[in-house]
Amino acid sequence: MSELTVAADLGYVEDAFAWARKRALEWVRTDAAPGNLPSYWAGYPSRPMFYSRDVCHQAAGAHLLGLDAENFAMFRHFARSATAERKWYPLWAFHFDGSIAALDYHGDEHFVREIPAVFDLTYRALRQYGWTGDREWLDDPDLAAYYERSAGDFVRAHDHDGDGLPEAPGTGDIFEGTATYNEHPERPLTVAADGLALQYAALLELARHFGDNHRLAAEAVQREFLGWWDEASGSYARGRLGDGTLDFGWGLETSWFVPMTGLGGSGVRAERFLDFIEQQLESDPPPNIEAFSYLPEVFFRSGRDESAWRWLRHLIDSRDDYPEISFTVVEHLVAGLLGLVPDAAEASLTIDSHLPAEIGWLTADHVHVGDWDLRITQEGRHTTELTVHGGPGPLTVTVGSAGPWILEPGQTVRATSPHPKDLP
Image (cartoon, rainbow, N blue to C red; front, side, top):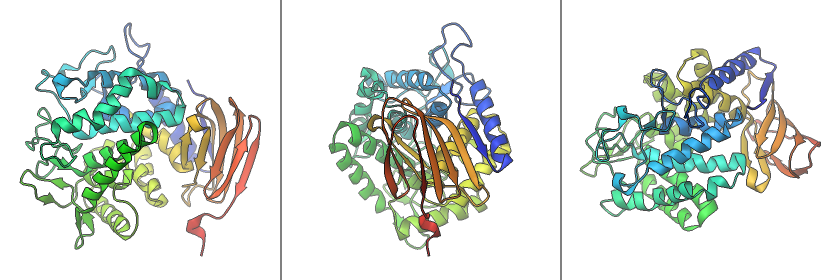
């Protein structure tokens, strides 16, 4: 297990991390029973299973806690379950011994399946390669085949109008397949914005590792989506209905996954849509705590650090026992607040502070990027200190717009520069 620790001038942060770390590690099931896969609980506490959507979202926090073997085993298990008979959908849930969860599977024609999960698995698995630098995330035959099929065979099997976007039947029945992670939309969608967002994100990750043709496909998805704009409301459509019309309004995941992945681009429209999302969160927040666990990621990426901190505090204060909460709190407190973007295979790390005004400084020690063991301290949004405790060689570090520095094991860099938001 990881020796990861967090210290801050705000005791609330230290208490939150201690709770989240302890509770997340208590969900590990690897040695809990004979025959278990390397695994952790990922789903309702009442269901002893791991679900694809939850594993995808818990994986970054799991890495920070030293659970790389668990991440790899579970992602590969989902990849192996996507077969031609299932039209390249992965199964939705497994028990810890790897057996299919019958609650969500009644046969190859009748099982829970949601289009975003297909692409989420590819996107988050390749992000794990960024954290670990472990070539198995690229070279494992089951994972490599899954990545290509998610972008190819799956899309072809479900793209009935030839626009490059897979469609769901539009019945809203999760056992027949749905277009969205939002299982209770006002009207069933055939194509949903969160599905497009994760398709776009997965294609960009694929382009980095498997060829630029995937980038062209990502750009085509984004072009299609950018036409879903409504000037009057300052929002994008949440999806497309069976008759081809666009469905506008507040869509929970179908709304906030757009800025989370960058599908909506940047500029005036992107900022107006973020305003729309923030307004809707005030008037009509999601009914389930796990939905909130995405919001810090949404707002950190968008540079709305105080909003990210507000929703991170909401997660922390809940002390909810849903496993996704403790795992994502670990991720948000470390990778989110410090703004870590790792590329272990290229021996590089980018840091960009997202500390809110309430936190004066924060230190995360024993952060693992590949085989590098790091201590990172952020003071406000101006000063970053990084020490390389150990590693296989030099690590290239960029802090905001400053750097890069090339650090050998045992070296420290202290970088001070104004944050763009603080400039006049």
